[in-house]
Length: 381
Image (cartoon, one colour):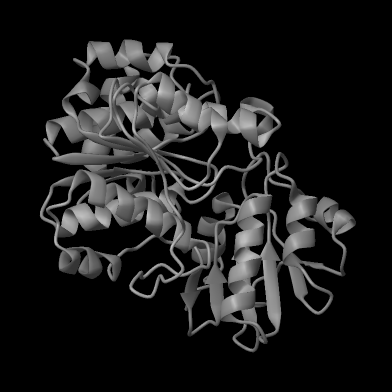
């Protein structure tokens, strides 16, 4: 199978869906010889921040000399971005071969289940030392949760997102995220939800509640919200790998890359941020107010229908902002006219050429639109 064929298969009708449960992927992994059981995983769940935590952890482990697998989602430009070893994407040829292999073993798998099975098989074949594993949706029934144990479970900030599947309160969502906690495996979090503590107690797991750091000077990732993510990652490293010298940790923090999370391009005076829910919007607004308090702002915003876009817009926009809406190539993309209808301030449809360095430009609202805007409209010069 060629890479383009693998992508067509992944994105074919019926694959891009959410169908929580472990039965289908477990059956396929069984036929593969259960590669997930050969791996040592740090498992990360949460509503916001889990990608940053994973990026920090992987950077430190790689800097310390470990062969480190990293599994994250979504991708921005290419599916292969989701599966990395020491910062290098899985080769396209290998990706296509493994997609074909996995699909031949289980025809009814979702896109995420296929990718997760490919990841486990690839990391096992390559004999990585450690895997930093980000959940997709939730935790308890997420495809990544087929692992029987982990070195550590990390649960980042909990907020209201995917409420139709995970529950309509933070407590219910915390319960789902806590499903990644395994017997006798420590759990680290920065928020003291009873559901997480109860799950830790039930599994005889060390429960470590950490305080967000106020100083993130050494961290290449910017954003006021990174203090909590940094605290989670560094406490994990200290717990599991006390032998890693502080100098190695510091060097790694300066090299961490996590695209499209408060990513600043000075030439275009442009911030790209994947804020796609109310908490993400709040974190973005706080970071904008901290780093660029006086600069006039131009927003380019687009989002999926199932998001609380009204709350996001009320959080992000002010009366003096220039606001553009973008409709991207996704069946669930919110139409520009409908966004404009509920927007509290005047807006216009996005057209190529509106991004100019005379104002601070902010592209946000959905990861799914970033690829289109960045590549097709040449937002980054």
